[in-house]
Length: 448
Ligand code: UD1
Ligand code: CA
Image 1 (cartoon, protein in one colour):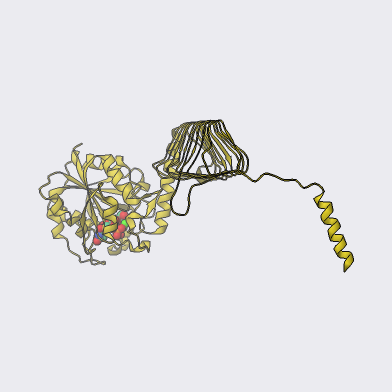
Image 2 (tube, rainbow, N blue to C red):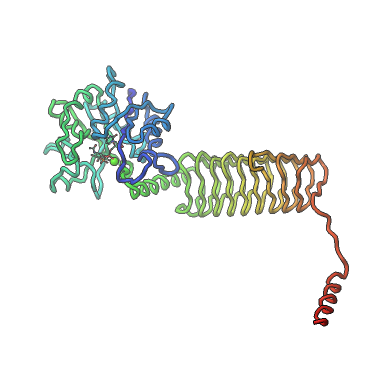
């Protein structure tokens, strides 16, 4: 397969989203839709990616920096007009262009590869990726002539009842010969219900030029879902999460209750790890083998080593790296910290901006006091230390190797290795105090 250019259309307002965020930046399974689309293009072999931006284009441009070139469509006059804006960027290019909207996050790289392959082997000027659906809704209908060749795409709003009955629809993903596309675009008219220049009309223009046009139908129609509203967004979310769950299970991860495991697409999990119910694993998190995660755990942008035990009710925040066999137990929050092999933080703790060695025991209720109201500071705890329950470690502070912190201490200065630190008021017992007070109260009553 020769290479191709990916042209992403993302200048539209996304009116039906009712949002101030550009539609393509709405997230599906933890990633903006446009990132899924661009990732898929690159995975399928695109040599170059160009995105047409317009509505809130600066936000998109910044978001895409370094990953996609951008061209502007200053006025949103339709998908055909949007594609035309890439003319100067593609001038003189003799290869194929995959045009794809920014709102098809579920499409797979293999679907694009199949499309390009069919386009090339059959020598088409344009090949439309279609799908056959039970509910064709407002998709453009793919109209074929009696011999089965595509003759046009008719937008829902412009379609007769007869055409609306067609269940093969346009995914809005196409492979075009670059010259044929840009020769046809200036010939589009906006004489339709929406007064827009439709990219779909390029198909009938090419046919009128006697150029060969083909269509390839998706094997799995769910991949072609175009997201136009929040309802569609939720459907895509569901579909993508299901896909992720399936692939994790196929790779040897147990999801005790798949429906309540919310795992972003970029997350990696090793085999024999068990994910318990109500667990959210997001961002670019990696989890090792043979871990037990959950129930009720949220892990984000962190690396969890092999054999770790996280949860129930734990919150592991960005920048956390857990070594092998670490325990992060109930009501523990760990943020931006490194935790060495075999260390245990079993209950009710906050560990933030800390570097913990191996084989440490952190008692219940231990808090790293990392923030002085202005800056964050680091707590270092060396291997083998024992931090008694309900201790406060006021950063910056270091607890040396094998040191002991007495329960209830507020540690403000470094503790040497092998030392015991007691940092709390000494207890005083006043013998007979209760009886004395009782007697004093009784005397008072008598006076009244
Ligand atoms: C489009 C297709 C329809 C297809 C459907 C599949 C057209 C005319 N219709 O309809 O046949 O079934 O996708 O999902 O192409 N855009 C611009 N500039 C514009 C207008 C749109 O960049 O002026 C971009 C949008 O940001 C979006 C994409 O083009 O990413 C598609 O636009 P949208 O309005 O979602 O088209 P649909 O009505 O879904
Ligand atoms: Ca759409």
